[in-house]
Length: 49
Image (cartoon, rainbow, N blue to C red; front, side, top):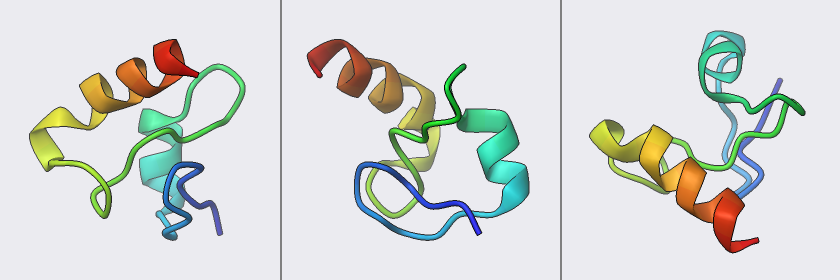
C-alpha cells in the first residue's frame, strides 16, 4: 500500500495515481494537508526540498 512521503500515512492506490509526482512520490495527503490544498502543498514541498 502506498504512503505519503511527507508524513508516512497510508494512502489508497487511487490517491497515489492522482497525486503522485512523475517519480511516484506523494508529497502531501489528507493526513498532513487540507483536502483542498493537497496539490498546492505537494508543489510547495517539492520546491522547498
